[in-house]
Image 1: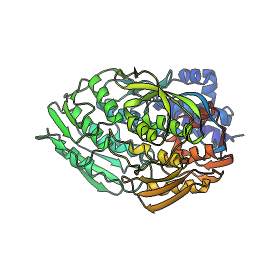
Image 2: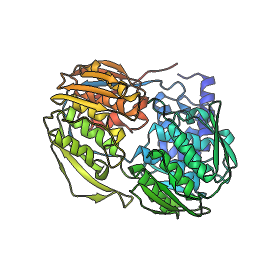
Image 3: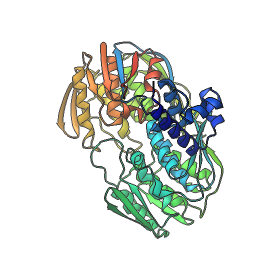
Image 4: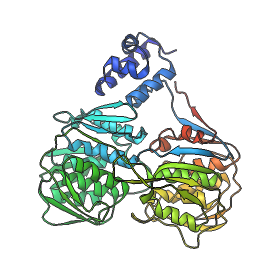
Length: 510
């Protein structure tokens, strides 16, 4: 039982969080299927609260603030060696969701995002938005309503939440037209090595933004100007392109961005900006011409498209467990190179006819996998900017290569730390050899064995370890799966619907 002091503290935290989300006691009660009087007693510290109720309140309020005495580290216990069957639906894109949340700061009206994945990365951005005065409200089937205040309270920013996501860097573009000076915490997220923010800063300088890095913060001063010439990006980065797009959106002239990323999350952001009245030519290409507006004050709705990285996760799950499953609502345009690479390795599958995503733009298909015997590719597998093999999909080829006959070279030239995490597959009996921080040899096929592993602090390698455990007969334990929950909603439960046997275990904290 929770003692009286803790009940009062928890009640106050729940009340403050509820109010910051713009919810009444009655609305919270309805979401929890309880009475308003019960919520009133909880907030006043007058009612015992079960761990289950605390978990439900945390989910409804999308906040870790009410996890006091609920649970600590979340672990997965996996009984591997089972084939999967049935169908699974791909959820909307993590990377599009965080870009759209940041871009919502451009709009003085209410933004409604439909079918948003309720993942930890989204929760962190929501916590930051709430802390600076933005009201957010979940409703219906994962729909999110975002209403900004007349003036953001940037000095109240939740620094702890901001430091747990790299997406905070995408606040720079929306804020530079609104505030003469502001500061943001250093970006966090996955531990993948040094990822310089210099391309962001040099690109945004064309709009009059100057940034100094001081004591863990980006201290920014802005004197908005119109770019006098085309902005050429030194690297074709996704978040860099997104930052420049949001900066260009409130420039009521014409901005040309060359060497822009045409990747899936950038396209989703472009489609959203068009709904706000911004005109963009060249969507899906490396040259974007943006005709911005001076002010945006609209009530808009937008549905981000499905996540190609999640779709690739399920493809890999089918391959390593030797399973035939159907993956519904897969964005085929962003999976074609991956599927071609797998075809060359012997992977067999069927595609449905194409249909449109809810954004009306992105092409979707259903992918039905067939049990296939794979061989190692003749050439190395490496990522390239879209339309090449997606950087985030590369790690899945490590666990796939471990099931194939022969030796595969995986070259992760983008991140200097990520390939190292793939060595964890050796604990599951995979034959993995690290050549340098960017390259690994993987030789298969693997006779998988169970193991206990601490989750790598990087999203995609973490899922790769989980997939290896699905293939390993016996009981494996994956400890501290926060990295996975950053980018996947209810992944264990959803894989279980296909016949996986994953138990979620919480370490209880006192």
